[in-house]
Image 1 (tube, helix red, strand yellow):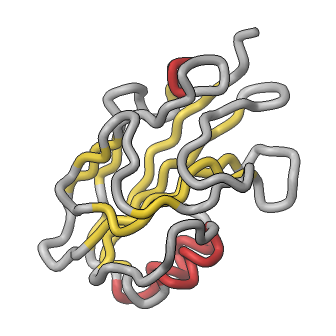
Image 2 (cartoon, rainbow, N blue to C red; image 1 turned 90 degrees about the vertical axis):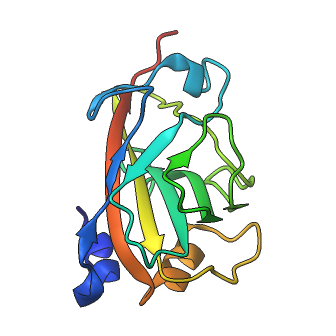
Length: 161
């Protein structure tokens, strides 16, 4: 877990979310269907161990291996129903701005080598008042003091073509 995630969680965290995807295993290869070489749709993300007090989920997917300061943000979403499943090819919750400047998901498309894609899910004690189009930093700022639990799953991708 990175230092920002630890800072955001702070002393208020009592649980760790169990985050997985039926599309790939932890540290396994993400199928090309979910990338720039395929359909460029988001994979399903399963979330378990959600605290009963959770009012919403937030998700940040990023690639820290991208050749730019802070990596590349692929997906930002919040006010997702804490039902436990973020569906494939979904636009659940409010969609934020990815690193390409567009709202919603954009799949892995590394310029070279194998990159790590972190799907971080946060259980929050409230719905956020952020408007559609907010970016990763704005979401992180809005979540401060509202995170009940956090978890992540990491997938890998290397271009085939």
